[in-house]
Length: 259
Ligand code: ATP
Ligand code: MG
Image (cartoon, rainbow, N blue to C red):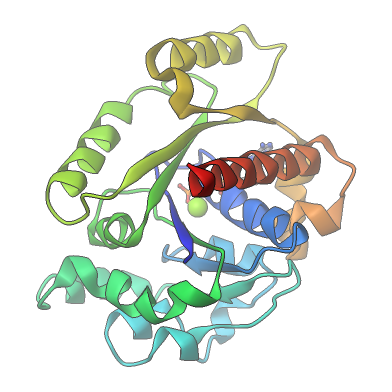
């Protein structure tokens, strides 16, 4: 059964999409069967995976509205070695249309149910908001990964997100866990980076991934070539950090299975 990770933080530009695409590729490089779902109308995970978001025959939009089975929306084996259900601006309309639908929180969870057996990991890239799309992701997920940019105001908004996660646990998804808080764009020369990191460890301890994602320009370059960092520059610090994160997640999964 797949572990389903929602990558969520309503703060914009913290590394959700960068983590979604590169963690998907890093897990695939470890011979895991991985599905990445783009759940953001910006479609950044789609273009970052090398798929043209302006030329989509079908997308997660059609799946959420029940017009298409999730299986039919999969683009198999994109260049990063994982499968993708893409998204584009059409998804903005779904966010509104969902509000009038029965079981609106469960559209994604129910659509993904038939796919759980065929993947080791399903990653859901959320939009920068706590809207109905993010609620669908949190209802479908087993675990949330919260990327946190190690910079100014990093912790602002975190309590709103943790509150939403608690609400979801109390209502639609009691099994939901925090997979981990992930420090991104870390710059060891910047004292603020170190302060944020220390604060996170003090407040959240074991819930913080040991792996730290450094600020690395290669990570910012890769999406414009539609490539993951693993193929764009496998020896870069960015690639090594996402491979390390995949390793940490695989070890966690293994420990959980044998517990
Ligand atoms: P949004 O909230 O808009 O969806 P996001 O949380 O998905 O944003 P990203 O798109 O992953 O954030 O990252 C924001 C910007 O920072 C992008 O230009 C990305 O290339 C860059 N970036 C992300 N992580 C790193 C990193 N570790 N080093 C350098 N640049 C990074
Ligand atoms: Mg994004």
